[in-house]
Amino acid sequence: MGKNVSRSIMGALALFMLVLVSAPAEAQFRRNRGRGYTKAQVEQTIRRLENQTDRFVQSFDRSLDDSRADGTRREDNLNQRARDLENSLDVLRQEFDRSDRYQDTRSQVSNVLDVAQDINRAIRRRSLRNNTERLWSRVRTELNSLASIYNLRQLR
Image (cartoon, rainbow, N blue to C red; front, top):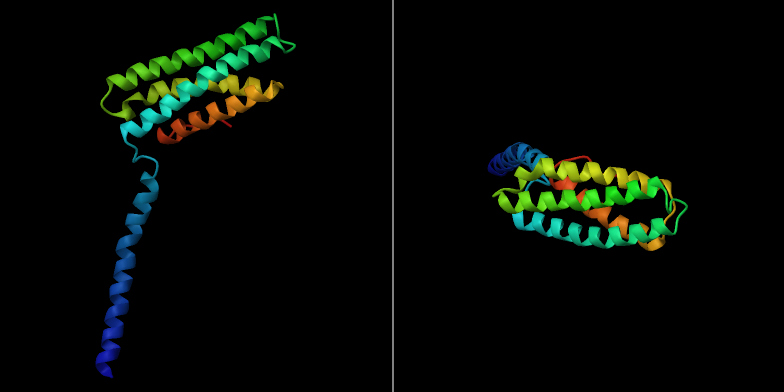
């Protein structure tokens, strides 16, 4: 019976040591979550964002034409911001394609998010066509995916 007690104690100690060793590994995993993307995965997110943004910009322009902002300087400014979003995505694409590591394009992603923030505020303040709001929701989802990948602030 003494041998069984010794084995039980040794087993419990081994299990305890395993828990002690695995706890830092688990903490390290949590800290690095979201940073284990491949360049191909990030490229897919950028491609989806580009496609969704193209659809959104067309719908956004039509929605503004049907709104009280039609024919105003505000409409012109909002349409320009939508084009700025497309342009910032073009710059991101160019730099992304040139770099070996997706992390090297963090500043371009930050710029895309800054431009998108203005559009996001405008959409939250006004009522637009349901289709335009749905398309923006898709764009915002992809933007927030990029923000998460690059550990940047997401749009709300």
